[in-house]
Image 1 (tube, rainbow, N blue to C red):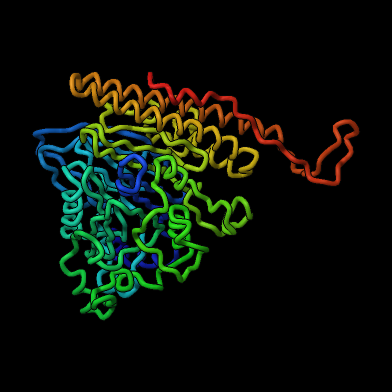
Image 2 (cartoon, rainbow, N blue to C red):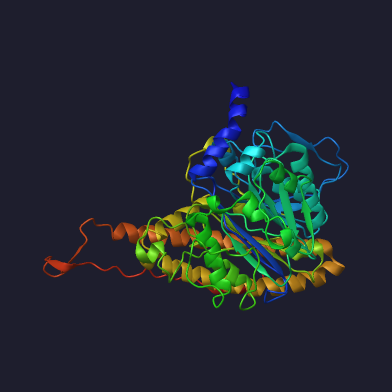
Amino acid sequence: MKKILCALIPLLLLFCLFSGTAHACTGVYIGREATTDGSVIIARSNDTQGNYPQRMTVVPRIEQDQDRQMPVDNERSSFFDLPGTTFKYLGTPFMASAQLENGTGMDDAVCINEYGVAMTMSVTAFSNKAAMTADPWIAHGITETTMNQLVISVSRSAREAVQKLAQLIDQYGSSETNIAMIIDQKEAWYVEMYTGHQYAAVKLPDDKVSVFGNEFNLEYLSDYADCITSENLEKLAVDNGFAVYGKDGELNLLATYAGPETVEDYSHMRTWIGHKLLAPSAYGDYDKNDRYPLVFTPENRVSLESVMELMRNRYEGTPYSPDETGRIDMRVIGTDTSLSVHIVHLRPELPPALAGTAWVSVAPAPYGVFVPLNILCEEPSDAYAGNQPEDRLHCFESDAYPWYTFKELNTLCLTDYKIYGVPVRAYWHTAEKHMIDSMAAELEEVNQLLKTDPAQAQREMTKYCAGLQEKAFDDAKALLNEVRWAMSANSNTMKMGINPETDELYTTERVLTPIKVELDGSFYGRRAG
C-alpha cells in the first residue's frame, strides 16, 4: 500500500496544483540600498489553514560528530549525512503536537546562523501543466519543512547556501514547487524551484525591493548580476516543446515554466499590493493582466516598521478590503491563516555572530506583535521556546503558549476589527516602535561588549530579547482577556438598541464602542530586559 501511495503522490500533488488547495505565503525582499538603515531585509508569512503551533529555538554549534543525519523529505525516508561540524542557528519550528498533527518535519520556517546567513522557504508557487508533465515532482524529494534548517546549518555564506540547495535538488529531486530567499551580509539570492529537478537562482540587486504572492516572477537571467541554474533548465523545455523565448532570443523563464494559466487573483493581487504600497506612483489599480516585475525601485527607502505593516496588509483603502467591504473572497497578505510571520533584519556593519535578528509574530500578524530573537542569544524566553508535547494534541492552551494566545486574539479581533482590532493594533504599534528603537541601541552596546567579553555580551542579548518576549506574552494574555470580557458582555443576538430607562427597543442597531487598552507600551523601549 505504501508503494502505491508513493506512486500516486505526484499525480495527487498535480491535482492539488490546479485545484487551488496548496499552501499560501507572501514573500518580501528589501535591498540594503533601499532600506532606511542600510540593513537587508527578507520576510515571509508562513500560511496554511489549521492549528499548527510554532515556537522559537536556538540550536547550538556542534563539532566533530560524524554520525548525524537530517531528513530530506516529509516522510523521513531520505536522509542527508551531515558534516562533523554544523553551525549554530535560530529557527521557528512546529511544536511536537503540530508535527504529530500534520505529519511533516519541524519546518523551521526561517533560520539565521552564526555566520549571518539567513534563509526562508517557502512561498509555494505554481508551474504549468506542460512543465510538470515533463518533469514531475519526486515523491521523496526535498520539501520546505526540512530545507531551511538543513541548508543553514552547513552554509557559511548565502552563495554556499544556494549551491547546497541546488545540490540537494540535483541529488534528491523536489516534491514541491517553491520559492526561497537566502541572504548574508554581502549578497541576497532568490530561488525558484519549478519541477522535480529544474530551478533557477539569481543574485538580487541591492537597490531594489520585491513583494510577491504565490507565483513565480523571474523572467530573464540576463537581468541579474549572477545566477545558478539546473543543468537542463532550458533543454527540458526545448525537448518537450514548451520553451518560450523573448527579448534578444533569450528564454523567458516565467512564460516557459508558469505562463498565463498559473495567474490567479488569489496570488497576483498580493504581488500587486506590494508594488502599490512601496511604489505608489508607478503602480495603479489592480489588473490581473498586468505584469508585476520581480524587483522594482521603491518610491522611498523602506524601514523595518514599514515591512511589519506590509506583512499585516489587508487591502485597506481599496475595493478589495475584506474588513471594510465585507467581501469573503479576498486572500490578503495579513491573513488569519498564518502559522507565523517572520522578518529577517540583517545588519552588514555588525559582526556576523550579532548581525542577524529574526522579528517573529507567532501566529497571525494583523493583531499580533513582532518580537526579536538575535542569533547571539543563547535561547529564547521560556514561553516562546515552549514545546507543546504530543500528548497535548488538540489542547488549545492560550495560558501556556504564545502561539495559542495570539491565534485566538487574532481570531476574535477579526470578528469586529473596529471594536476590538483597532485598539489592539494601536497598542502593538506603539510597542513595536519602542522595540525597534531600543533594539538598535542594544545592538550597538552589545557590539562593544562583544569585543571584550563575548560571554557577557551573549547573556545581555539573551536577557534583552527574552524580556521583550515575556512582556509581549503577558500583554497578549491581558489583551485577550479584555477582548473576551467585552465580547461576552456585549453578546446579544438581538441587534437593536434598547432604551436603558424604559427598556423599549430603538429602531436602529445598537452601536458598540471600541475597547480601551490600558497597558504601558513604553516598557518595550527599556533596554534592561
